[in-house]
Image 1: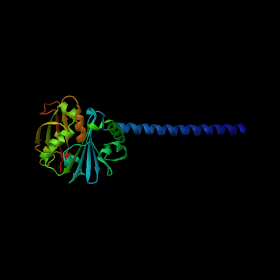
Image 2: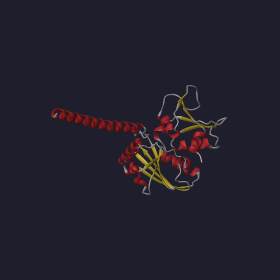
Image 3: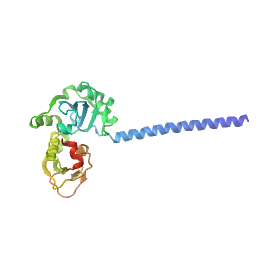
Image 4: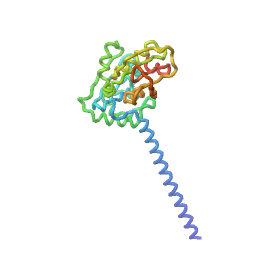
Length: 263
């Protein structure tokens, strides 16, 4: 009887140990899968420009992290519609948006992991990497600027181009054509202006013969950094075309995207 009881108790302990190990392994496996998903969803590659818009109620701060030049640009926007998307207000494409409490704009890069993102394009992995990068930037390589809205387009374009030019994209020099198929008058020019602020070589802006419900991103040749940047900006997967095009990259803006970039 005693031997049977001891054997039963031993088996029970074995079962409990195996169950505990299984639970621990399941938790570790789940954490690994979650971590892999977060890393794969990351939009900051650690090498090229990344523009983040930190929104604080009725104002916002644009932060350009530029690993290839080991620098940062911090632009504070105030005034009319300053808390809205920078693509619409001043024509600067952003990779992600976050919400921040009131604080010194210079402190935002160091506290990114503590802020909530707007949408799903900014992961915790992105926030940690950007924050770590910010700590390596020398104070002499940080440019700060304050812009009060509204401002005349002609008076602000040169300033924005000097602040936000993506050097890798500019040096690549891919030609870009914009086709407005979104049904918004002047929408193609607004998008061309936005792309010009980050150094794009826009050579053509036209209006489609008819509107399109769906936007497209067409390219010729091999995939490039410029293509990947455009895919992030427009949230469109590029389509390679073999036929001769007027430009290396053609952006056809349809009704599904035009509202993201025009007022």
